[in-house]
Length: 70
Image (cartoon, rainbow, N blue to C red; front, side, top):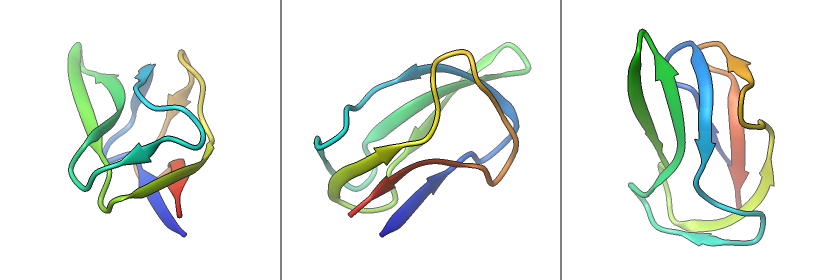
């Protein structure tokens, strides 16, 4: 399992993928808002989304797991 983590603290603006969806390496999977900027969080690897750990509106800290990819 590969974990996609938050690169900085912020609020989840949008989850761009669904459970079971195939993603490509470098694909934006979550949008965070931090300091009034939108920050795309990209998948580090290709695979299938196994589990989404956040919801829109959640506050996350740097390093928090957003989703896992198998």
